[in-house]
Image 1 (cartoon, helix red, strand yellow):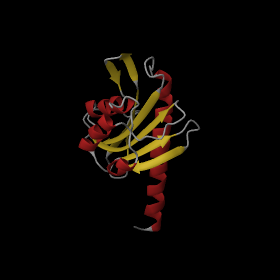
Image 2: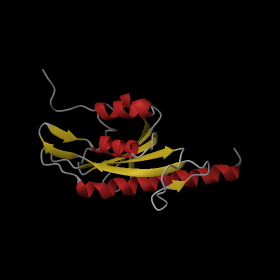
Image 3: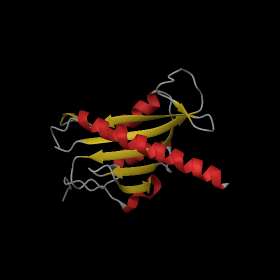
Image 4: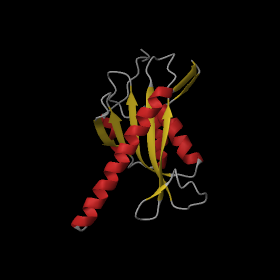
Amino acid sequence: MRKSELKNRQLIDIDHLEALREMAFSYLNYAQASISGHRVASSVLAFKKDRTRSYRRLESRDRNTNMFRVFGGCNLEISVSTVLHAEAIALYKALSEGYTKIQAVGVTSDHEDQIKPLCGACRQLYMYMNPMTTIYVFDKDKKVKLKVKLIDTMNYPYMSKGKIT
């Protein structure tokens, strides 16, 4: 890869990271966390090859003419039996609009200990789509606290307080 191509690629990556960050933090305002008390928000960067509908203001092209878009989601705790995870909602939104090539996920929370890159169920959903998805965990100050490939997340287990003994 030539130096100019590397520089362009880094700019694209920075733009994607900033889009993930801003989308996740904007969705944190919509989180409904009456059960857990922890608001969580997520964003997903996804691509699609075909341009089947025109959403020029929402879609952008990368240099390979792939369409990419960032989708957001937040946790919705409707009842004890109906808790929807932010990461799953963002993924479902992307898939339902034809964006099936998942590249990155951004996650944030208003909880002090936000360092986990998705729960096991959400990890499995993303594993079906792309095991090489990059996960970014943002702290309250919007800084990247953790960057990890989905395939490597076993080093960061998600432990619930509801352990069976």
